[in-house]
Picture 1 (spheres, rainbow, N blue to C red):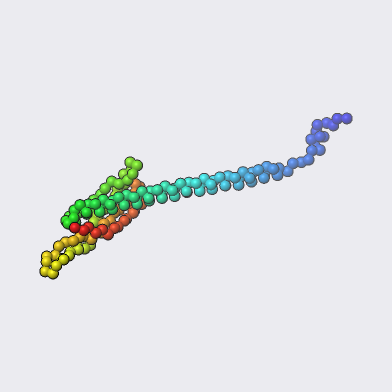
Picture 2 (cartoon, rainbow, N blue to C red; picture 1 turned 30 degrees about the vertical axis):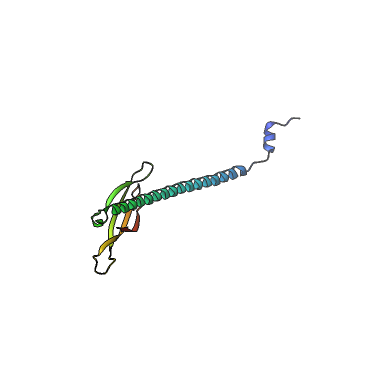
Length: 150
């Protein structure tokens, strides 16, 4: 004899809903993991961008330093006439503002014979190159002590 449908349904074991709770907990855990992974990726991208900007500011300051050394070498023996100058530095079409300045530290004078006139043999110059990078927030200062011999 066939049982009525209502009796069959009433005899079925009652479900407690444990699978739903476990699935919701797993969904929350996966969401937390995905959120933290995205946040870490964004942080690493910012760190890489800052490192690149710092490196480019360093390169621009070094380019300014080399320009200052060339200007001092070209102006010898009138090194005191060299004035601080701004240059546009950078590669890949980007323009970084950089400056250099020269400070005479010592004039080296020699005489090879007793009683002979003293001649200027060289100038010791401190050259400072500065750059703030493309964003203007990466201050890089480089100095070199440069001897220009005559």
